[in-house]
Length: 226
Image (tube, rainbow, N blue to C red; front, side):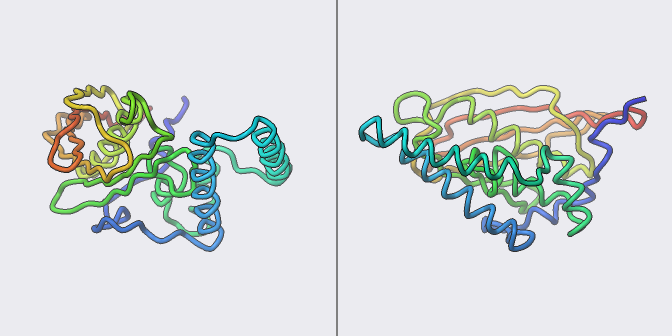
């Protein structure tokens, strides 16, 4: 019988996410370099979206980036969370650190991520993020799908207050007000209750003193035989 990947790795506590809004240090120098590359790529993408230059300049830049991508693709590759996790476990013994490196929501080494910073304090999970024009939906405001991504990550980490983890069962979001871009946003998540394998979570997103979105989520711990 196929074994669920959620049973491959265990999170016994939330200590690994930290207790302050400051980003955790990288695993090693290699991951620091990856973070620097991801930050540069985010800057490049944001600059390209707002640039008003000739087509020839865009094409020259595309050729340069494609050439560098081809060089990386020709090297040894570790594709996917599991491959990276096995390497991290072998080198560091801290698989949970992977979330802070390659998650599309908060991965400092993932150029797709905004990225969001998360920490635990007082039995609550907190988040902080500033999203630029790369994540725009309605004019000047954060895309609703990106808000869903941030909430899913926040609640997914928060469920581990119960001592177990599992995939998202449902995620329901209410958008109260448009969420502005280019300013600090804060998020909070709390566990409401646990019923068997189900963990019921709630979360909120704030821009200053304005609560722009709230959510409810159910996360389900896989059966031992899954």
